[in-house]
Length: 111
Length: 118
Image (cartoon, rainbow over all chains, first blue to last red; front, side, top):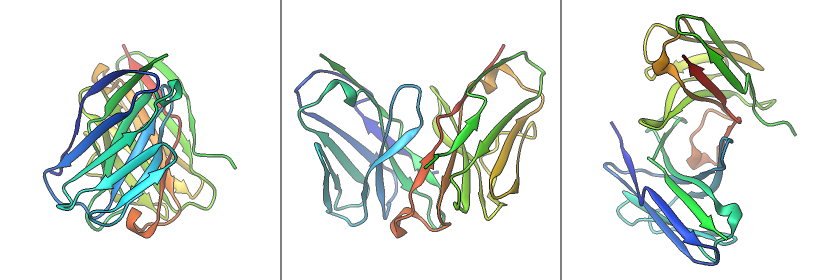
């Protein structure tokens, strides 16, 4: 089946630092999504990417859809303590509206 | 507006007992999803419904799991009998339409039901 692998698996950074994480797939996706899961909560959509090569920003977050449509990265600039959580990439199952989720990157921000 | 509402938030039960998890999707949403999250397997789709009809239940682990959606505002996920390996966080989610995210269709998650089977 389709697999979405994220790296790194976890990150410990100082407040104010920039963060970069990425997601790779064994197959092509036509849409990439980035979700964040706060501790004890459900995932919340951060950014959606619809075209290969697309670069999209949402505040301090920037995400890009890889040209090959098999990868994506998410950057967070000037991290703050509330950025703590697990970041998931996700892509839709072909012809359906359910999602495959990546393995997740757990971010810890040290004040 | 209320989001996806799940109950119970936490449940601890003994092996062999029946567990019923409940979900109220966002009002007006036509698609409902049940996901399970574990450390080993991450977030995986169990089943989803469009207009109260189950569309894909290939993720349901085994016959001990069943899900129903008797109307547009309520769904249940039942485990009978429960086993320790069923311990996980179970998320219900909903989306407005049955189309994919490329159509601007966003899936919204509830806060999850944390299940521990001892």
